[in-house]
Image (cartoon, rainbow, N blue to C red; front, side):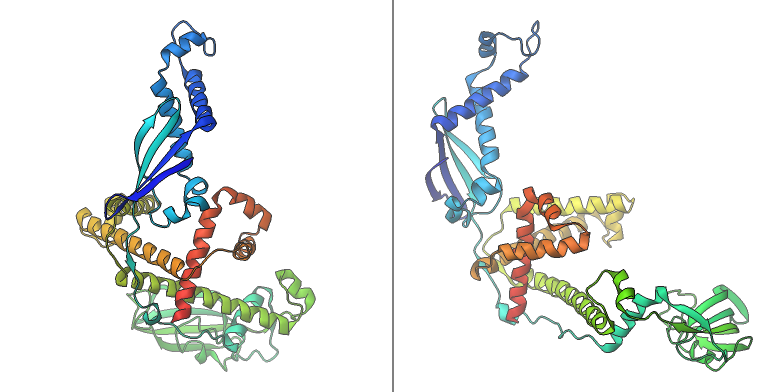
Length: 435
């Protein structure tokens, strides 16, 4: 493909002229003719048995040229041939990724000459990235958080050993029967038998567990507590309740020893209690880090989409993004087993028209954000390295439980989507580092 000319058409459009000729065009024309010939049907002849002269008579040259041109265009405006071809990097940096408007200049047996007209990238003006006023705190992991998480790891393998004195203390496992009453009447969900409760777990209403401390097996007690005002069951919220409790048995909780043999069941790099503590601490830190990054990403999305200015937004982009958002709405409705109208109502909109206004504005903001992030990527020269890809696939392999090689093979034809995800995350991290 030969680049003939390029020039701005107007303030928002850019035209690029190409020409294909010689052997490459001859092969395209021959392939188009063969494709049309193989699908040709003429009464009285079986498929593949139509005489060559009759084929030529029933297939026009213009149809052949048109089919060849369509395939050339379809293949050319792909990631590798045009959008990610270094030869056209200066051009693609000026224009918006999308399907161009094609104008055929010449189409015959000798050449295919055409002009592709694109929308120019809007002029983007970023806000001061160092003054976005992002709200976040330094991540800290307390020893209490680590110990609680370790207990969650171990609780499935605990042993309940009956206590010699059968006296309830904090940390014991107590098996109880109870009946809860409001105004002397039992309420739904307030009664249970043989219920195992760990004292100090705060699994019950505040004050319930503390009032069991000191009791012995086979003893009863009437416990007075009050449901919190924000209790999930609104009919019980804020109401005083009396529980008649009977202690069946009291047990010590014996946790497994954190040695290499026991820890091997988790398939982690920890062989003793100290190493396990560090492993859990790191897991909690990474979980908090992920949640913080997700929150900061949302803050940055909101700020850039509201504070970035652009000289124009092509209608085609807004319409395309709005269609994508509407497809998401349809998928949500199908998932919820609702009509689109009921899904819109569920989201708090009173009419289709009101939702359409919201959807169009959201589409516009999404585009502004995408343009802003692209600007950040360009200004700071952010790129995806082989190391970035290796780290991504290494993490993903642990999440999905398959090998790095299998993942790479799965994404072999869609590696651009992975690169796009990585480069955008790197841009977000760059913005965070500036604040």
